[in-house]
Length: 334
Ligand SMILES: C[S@@+](CC[C@H](N)C(=O)[O-])C[C@H]1O[C@@H](n2cnc3c(N)ncnc32)[C@H](O)[C@@H]1O
Ligand code: SF4
Image (tube, rainbow, N blue to C red; front, side, top):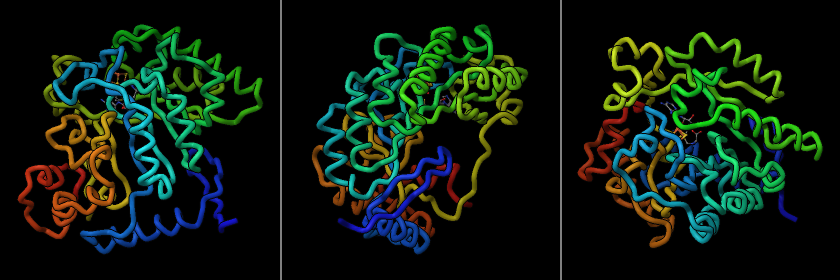
């Protein structure tokens, strides 16, 4: 029997017993981030893992929905998820299983969740929930998922359709109700249910109605969030609005002294590619820092390009093109 610590997730409130090894690694990662260590000894303790970069919807500001050229479309195989677990599973505290597509279009999604959950890793997923075939409320509960975030962005069919193009509002609500019913039947608090609402100019007036809808469905939380506006895609949603007019709705630019991603977190694409974060850099393979199927994680984590990216925060100019992404990122410190 090792030493365990009780760790509480700040959003869901769920507690999990974590081995000392995970806690020690997380504390060391934060310490090394503060010190801007270029070759950290700690591994990341959170990760974004993309089970699929394909989607059945066509959201106007999503590069996947708009078929912007990027990584080859595909779904993560079980052996790729296993490689991630073998390499860093002992250190991960939580993972988000979505990024550039609809995660439930991966036929192995329930098994993938269950494998991460079995390693004492908290799991969360964001989904459009607009599907029938892959929707199995019993499986969603049985696989051990901690947090399900459902992207809806409207309280009426008409408004919903404006962003979730190709989705089915009534189907999403019916799936949500079935899941809440199943949780009740099995007396399960999991998954914690968040209904998400990106606040755009077109749905601004439906926030109150959305809150009421969430109360009626008995969701655990409503999340109103500012969207980002990809400049090249804006015209598809708001042809008559200037970027300046839209900027009041956008996620504010964050100024940071250094970026936690490079020390505490990491992103994996469906094909095993490793990226320093989940922003645009992971959309196209030309920016990849390595691949977990061909290298050890340590090799990638301590690679020249990772070191150069961390050194950006010491004011050094990167030589590698890929590290320039961190230099240009709007989230970095001024
Ligand atoms: C690209 S989606 C993939 C997961 C899933 N297909 C979904 O839509 O929830 C990942 C997250 O990005 C959010 N998202 C989509 N468009 C966005 C935008 N323009 N600004 C900010 N977040 C956005 C979604 O609501 C979701 O929570
Ligand atoms: S549902 Fe998600 S992945 Fe699909 S197009 Fe919309 S934002 Fe993109």
